[in-house]
Amino acid sequence: MNELDSAPSVDVAVVGAGIAGLAGALELRDAGFRVAVLESALVPGGVMGTAEIRGYRIEVGPNTVQVKGAMRAFLERHDLTGGLVPASPASRHRFLVRGGRLEPVPLGPLGLLRTPLLSTRGKLRLLREPFVPVGRPHEETVAEFLGRRLGPEAVRALAGPFLTGIYAGDERRLGAAAVFPALVEMEEEAGSLLRGALRRSRRPVGPAGLRGSFSYRGGLGGLARALASRLGEALHLGARVEEIAPRPESAGGGFELGYASPGASGRLAARALLLATPAPEAARLLEPVAPQTARALASVRYAPIVSVAVGVDPRACREPITGFGFLVPREEELSLLGCLFMSQLFAGRAPAGRELLTCMLGGERWPEAVHVPDRELARRIQADLERVLGLRDQVEVLHVHRYPRAIPQPGVGHPAAMEEAEAALGDAPVALAGSWRAGVAVADSLASGTRAAEQLASRL
Image 1 (spheres, rainbow, N blue to C red):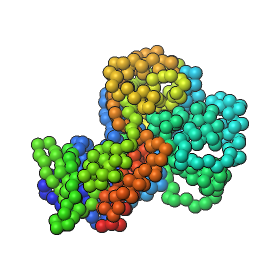
Image 2: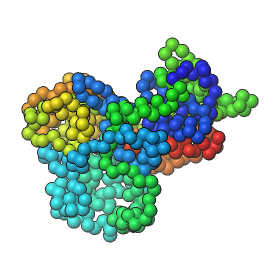
Image 3: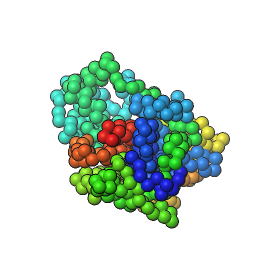
Image 4: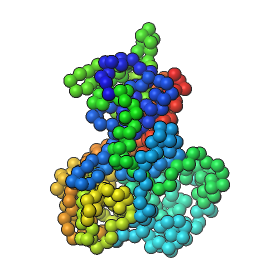
């Protein structure tokens, strides 16, 4: 990983070495373009990282990935599928807290009919879904859309906690078209979620993903390192882009980036840009060259998250620690948003006789959590695990990681706003990628990077 001074001019400058930037850079390099990736942090991966602490292997960002079709195709192209580590079969079993106790999340239609998480009235309301009139889902929040189709009880008992686990958000503010685009398309195409699902099951689909949840050899930080190693000297860590300015046509056009790294600064010329940073950072950099796009990106909201890894003695718990983990509905009034049973999902995550739990706090429910001292967070976690799992022993706090700007919160109109933001770029050789673009999952972020690379390749 060389100094930027030795590569003053490239075809594409990629800003950000999270999963989107790394994937986009690899696709561009393999298409024959000269690429430089500039990352302000000293390690690649963005929020994706893994730490080894006291015999525990801890994810400090995303804990698992779903390998969707685009991600699987990318990993196969780059010979990276061999590093995937599937979660144990127990990962199918997930729980919600109800009355301070764990209730299994229903699996399939029969599970919905049997679950105590819905009343008889709530279950009967689900059966009305095929007869509900088509609405205007692009103008609805998730709560409005699913409440109209499935009933408010299903939103409160099932959809709300589900979105807590993915977005740490509020179903009353998240936009239906942004969060559940496939469901919105089903209503528009078939007039019903049930009929839409049946139609889709009978027609060809795109590249198939892999079933279940996965990690990577060495944790998800290992995936980041594997991608980074393939970029070699094209990756420049500790290089923060301070500014981007258009270059005059007399100088070859494109852009000039000013960067700062420990003890040095300099400039880099590029014919094109791939911005794979959080939306506010992309907005700051684009202000001089694309102010309309910058204003749209600056409006993207984020939810803060605190991730706390704790070790526990399973013999000191009333409830068995098994399965994927649990999510906490808003009505339970716990500090936790949820808890993942990481040593149950993947082998080698905890010392013998111990379990590794990842506790999530904050989100839209308690944004102030990122400012709460470690000791108070530990006290709240202890109290919540005592209530839910019957824990009779002290938790071993291993790692606390605060993300003041963790997960984008796409509201009503977000997809249209992002399309307008990209349209405002016109023919400029600039592409945007990241979790705020079209999905917050690791696979979605990776796919946004490969799509951005494809857009740029067609313009250069």
